[in-house]
Image (tube, rainbow over all chains, first blue to last red; front, side):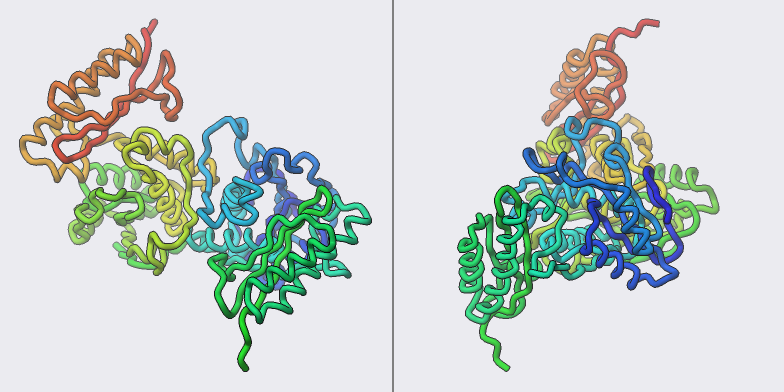
Length: 280
Length: 280
């Protein structure tokens, strides 16, 4: 495996699949790497980037505390047969100038970036789309893998790639879950044992919503919210939208989005819903 | 010359220089094409795009009236030995969906896009950077040519290419001027004879500013403004900034920016200044 710490990953003549990450690699990331390999085959290239992007963290968020262990990440990538690990420095991505002092050109997600995660985390998706845009330019790939766990991010990256004509196919990879259904996330490391047990209310809330989906979005939301509150979680939002983040349809495919706090730790999850009475 | 009307211009193995235009090609565009050829040589490729971009025009601006003559543009490109003319439709760039109805991902120029042209034309540089970003992806070039006549645009595109890591060298090509110094512009076609004569006050104002530059930015601005007002032009702005659009230095290299109206026609121009007493 080649490790590249600066500059860019020069263009390849073989198909290339890209897995952008913030490191702290877990089974969820392994699933992205495995899907990447499947897409480009043995003669293609899988490139993983590890970059904890300061501009997508808000003031008071966990940028400094975010878990970093490049040696462990290297081992995971080697085990998964990754061809190239791209691990640039902050100045390698944003230049030597002080990050926040300079006026910067950014990628603006539009109104869909101000909803859900964007309410609690203003500027978050501007940071995400801008760094993904930079990484897409530095790792010229044909296809890129993103987890469905960060659903709003996945859809906004898909839109960016299509609307700005990056010509990169975006693949959403299903969420990997722990034995009790909790979605794998680097932030799960912050949970103590008791919080970890209570966090299982999140996948239970998804399940409760799925069971009520035939009665409409409102019923599904109420059911999910009840499960979260009964387990003592602080709900940031429970909402239903169309698969493309547009307004929820009255019937058919939709997405349930959840953000909730367990103690000091903020977790997000989501699932597909089929709204309305299904007539067979 | 190949003419491509949809999709993208597939990647080439030879050096490629790109000249994005809104058509209505004049001597200023020819200078861009000639510089493009010089940069990539005979074995390289020169690609010209012609696309009148609706998103960089404001309400009440001249999008519908903007001069369009693709046959004439084709002749100019052929005369200049252009290899590929890329002339996409609006839906080829933005998709079939209605342009303004959908939430869109855009490229945000940041605070420098809200000054000067951005005051009169809010959203203009978001439109410019977004379409240039799309065109850069659709015409994979190594180098791209922009006129110094649109100086704020040139600097913002340079910043975008660098900050978002497009890996495309941006070349600013000196302004081509008419016999009386008026910068060539497609919008000069809107001027009647009397307005055309009065428009010469703009290059005269640049010259007046240059003569006063050793006395500082304030003196240079006052001198330029006086020339414009005495010729009956409505001044939108006369300002001095650093070459990178930052605050004007007290001495050394700077840029004078002018926007003024001659009758209903809004014209812009700019020149380099050397501020402060030059000690030799």
